[in-house]
Image (cartoon, rainbow, N blue to C red):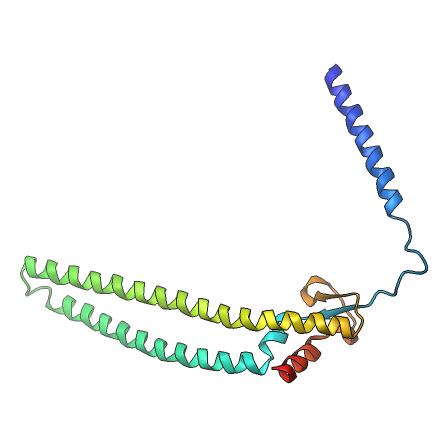
Length: 180
């Protein structure tokens, strides 16, 4: 019981110290502080709106479509093999049927692994394209912030409301396209 009192007293002391420090630093900003200018940007829209991203993504999409067609053909072939095995299963000997089923299961696993590997490969590729342009875009946004004398530029998704006049998304995209 006595130790609880000591803990409560220590907590009270700490809390009072915190309040004192908080109120010392939470004073109103002095009159000579510079004006705060805040801009916002939808960084995803700015990146995907660049000519470079559109060009890179078009190339990526072409490769993706070719692979999609290849995978669809392999899947069709695999389904045909399954149908053939099902049709012939009654006339095959148990040993031969088992061998064919095992071979078919191996092909199915290989196909599924191939699809999974390609999905991962394309996801990495898309991420690499976006990250490469994102790094350049961040530099553009910093330069815009400095040149336009913004105190800070926030991601648009962070806030609930912003005046459209402080949205720098289109300006950042245009500036990026001019510099690249």
